[in-house]
Amino acid sequence: MNTDPIADLLTRIRNAARAGHKYLELPASKLKIELVKVLQQEGYIKHFELKDDAEGRFKILRVALKYDTEGYSVIRKIKRESRSGLRKYYKVANMPRVLNGAGILILSTNKGLMTDRAARRENVGGEVLCLVE
Image: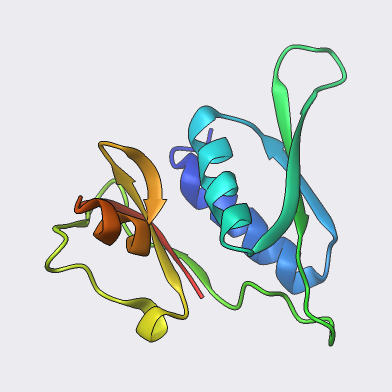
């Protein structure tokens, strides 16, 4: 039993990118779908789709990874920041910049999942789910 589904998603993405896979599949949830939507909007993945499993009992999230012209993954680093043992929350004024704006933080706010740039625009803080470079 997996206790942290977000960490599992990030680990699967990291492992698939390092292995050079075009796609990865994992069990879907609303939070995972929203996180993958943010990654797609920011250009870190090509696309994703929802499918039913073979028995039709639950949904599977299929993610297409993105690579540059030389075959390297667009995602250089993806890391879980806030975890069950140590939650990390930032106010707008204290929110750090990743690689001076070249990377992103994905935050869970009261307005939904969004990047650190969008959170600054909306003037909201929240829990930092992950860092992507």
